[in-house]
Length: 204
Image 1 (tube, rainbow, N blue to C red):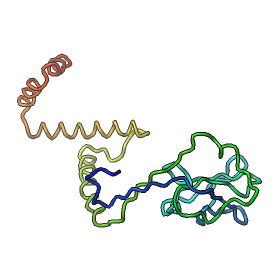
Image 2 (tube, one colour):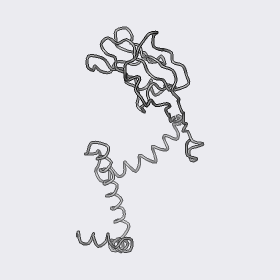
Image 3 (spheres, one colour):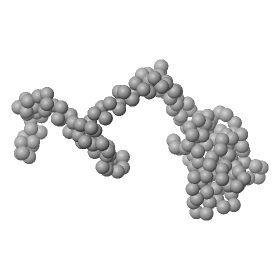
Image 4 (tube, rainbow, N blue to C red):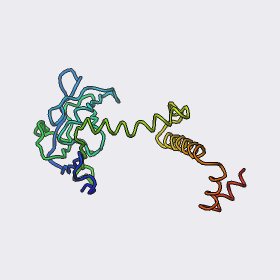
């Protein structure tokens, strides 16, 4: 399923079909729960009288998935809840399953269930990661220090993306002005796109 350019790379794709039903079981003291694969999830916050449990490192290392989301699992336990059912995605069997006679909540039986999940894994390659840092980090650092943009001023991915695009555009224009004369640049604009050149002159 991967493009041909990734066939012999350190990327690996896995398709996990929907398997059996597992269960999150709350431990003593309500400070942690055990996931269907036997890993420990610690309490992160209180919510509506209950508690939310999660563990990002455990989800990253897990061979199975107990959620169709790309993010790590956050499970909510109400005040009187001791077990929460979860649909498993993967071939390995769950370590913990719901007890006999356990009835999940209504949302567990919703329609249009996801039948399989796709997991993309990247093999640990420190040497290649260092090479990528040298290739990608250097241009960002150069541009940021050149124009004094040591940190972004906007918030949100759309606004920060636009801010960084303008920063790189300003840097590229400055590099062009340093390498070419102004008359040569205007002549190239006139030949490349006359309508844009007329609009630019009117704005001036």
